[in-house]
Length: 229
Image (cartoon, rainbow, N blue to C red; front, top):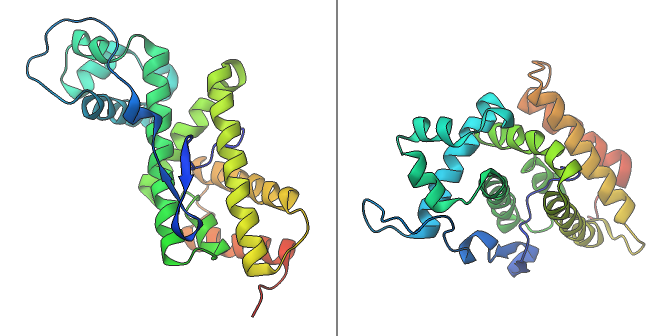
């Protein structure tokens, strides 16, 4: 996350201020060769399956260990099958990155469906409170270097940050009665979540899920004061 947060690009605002995403992955067609596959498959479904498995490798071993050969061994496919769906490693990395973001987005959307104005729960959904979200944060952190050197990754991260700021601005206006420009406060909350998540991923045992929730609540209170009654 130059801020890598879970609102997918090309999303549309829907009920309760949550986001229903027409995800860029759903519009992609398979690249690579035209070699016949062992059986007819939905192109997007297979790409997502492979990218999800790539995410497992990145989360466990780091981005530098992601190769077509290692991924093929991991999921029991040939490298030819993988190159049928991904033209190169950059294409595979982008899908891996976006699949992880989509998973996080779903967690936030679920929180907003319960209460669209609950800032605490919205931000908790971004934190690595359980194994699935910890996995996705390991992927995000692995891609920070890519965002520093590749424009497409950087643009994705900037878009997600700006969209998340918009969501937080809306909640602060509704729940805290803010009528001023809250962009700086929203970005401060994003920075806080990023820093806390990084500490958790460094496997500091101090940061239990209960303590993560507690310090988040303190940070919100310090920054914004009490919500409206």
